[in-house]
Length: 152
Image (cartoon, rainbow, N blue to C red; front, side):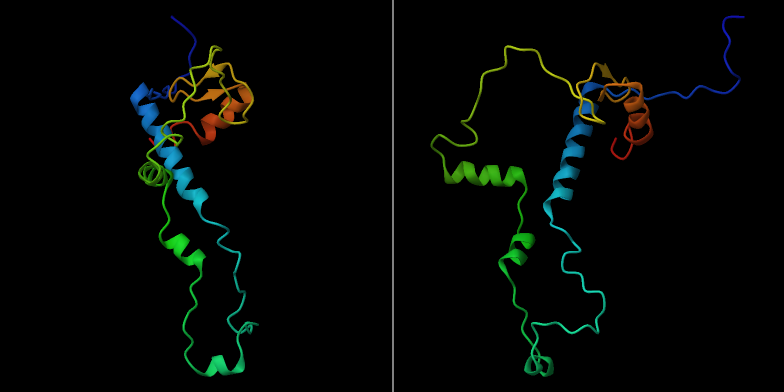
């Protein structure tokens, strides 16, 4: 008898190569960029349609009122992501200093690694996805909620 193992099947874990890990990280960043752009969607929430709006007057209730569109409306409608803003800046300011000309030499010190769960310095790497973790507790959280889930 080679070893003592239980009778149940061992789960085969998928291991991602470096290109797949980079793709997955890019997708996660794009999702974060989309999530973080808008402001609080519930900021101007009205609980009931019967509640009078204080900016309305008696005259404006009878006739059809034209909607006043603020600058915020156009900011939301014609919003740009970071890469579009950088390209726009590149053509507006072709002479240095600009985003494209700003560079720093590589660090003389080794790269620091931080835990993907809690943000503390980490010494360990998840084998399937390459994410960093610092402790057994963070590994458990990572395996339960993040590892190869939602984006692949």
